[in-house]
Every structure is written in C-alpha cells, then in structure tokens.
Image (cartoon, rainbow, N blue to C red; front, side, top):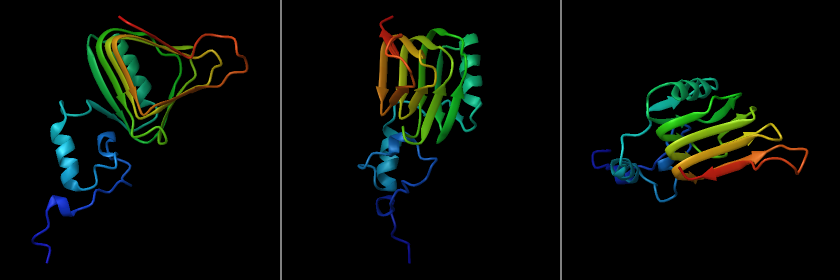
Length: 168
C-alpha cells in the first residue's frame, strides 16, 4: 500500500517541459525539495506565462506603451521571434525567465532591443540576433543574467557591440 508515502519519497519529473527554471538544479530531486524551493521564493512566480511564439512580442510591445512598471514573463520551451520592438523605458522591473538556454530561444531580427528600467533580469534562455548589427541595450541600476546564451550572426567584425550595459 502507498499509505506511508511522503513528498520526500517521490522523485521530481525533470522531463516535464512545464517545469519552472527554479526546479531544474540537481539539488532539487524530490517533490519535497521542490516544495521547499517554491515556498522560499520571494514572490508568487511569473506574472505571465507565454506559450505561443507571437505572444512575447505582443506583451513586450504592450508593456513598452503601458503605465505598468513591472513585468515578469515566463517562456515555455520554443522559439520566440522578435522583429522591430519599441524601446522599453521608464520601468521599474522587467524579468524574462525561460526554461533553459537549450529549450528557449528568442530570435531578434530588428536592429536594437533597448530596455531601460531599475532592474532587468534575463534567465535561462538563448537570445540570437539574426542581423549582423543587432544589439541588446540595457540601462539599469541592477541587471542580471543567469543561464543565458547570446549570439549574433554577422559577416563583418566591424559594427556595434552585441550587448551594451550601463547604469541608470
């Protein structure tokens, strides 16, 4: 009988594509470990879960034009194309979390992705610029990347830096 099973006895299914990035470290092996991680979080998790490729661009464009000051986006596995995006300015916080750089790719075809906020966090994703002069510009008091991969296709060594970081 399974009457004495506890969360410590149940392994966490790491193959689940919907698993949030906080639960991916090897130290999180059981359901009990996962519960501890989730309970220790400082916040309630993502504000918006993006599951379709076009939804990310819509959310970022709406955020750039809105009076909202904070946005936390979580991306399920997949490829998310971004064409020309208006600059995101005057915000308090933007956080974009993927499930891992191997499973989440943002492809930027526009010339610049520009974010100005008090805090910018990018985690567990890949960002590929398909333009030889594509650029990620972040101006923030606090900026952090974790578990990310950035790349740009270019036919020339001349051109702007792929990533430009500055304080706010």
